[in-house]
Image 1 (cartoon, rainbow, N blue to C red):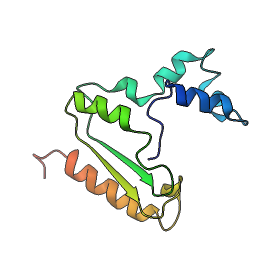
Image 2: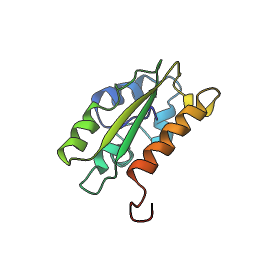
Image 3: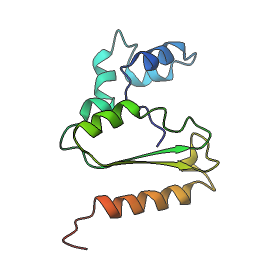
Length: 123
């Protein structure tokens, strides 16, 4: 949900260095130079493998829909891993935690999980 998929790329490093509150540096335990392995470990793209489950990407309409995902989607495609993208109409960045966006986001998640992750033998 509107999350960074690769904290190792140049754009992410630039953004972290430009953040006047240094939130990412605090969370990651330092700058890219001083805590490089933390940035690598925290990047979902570094964990994609043939064992990765289907993935759903979700953005608010007013929060750069789809811009965070092209590199991970390309990697998912190399392993033929199913992925989908959804945009929450009129949604801001933190759409998942507020009305009226929570319920539609939850409906999308439940439908995706039911369709892609449930054990078909028990259905």
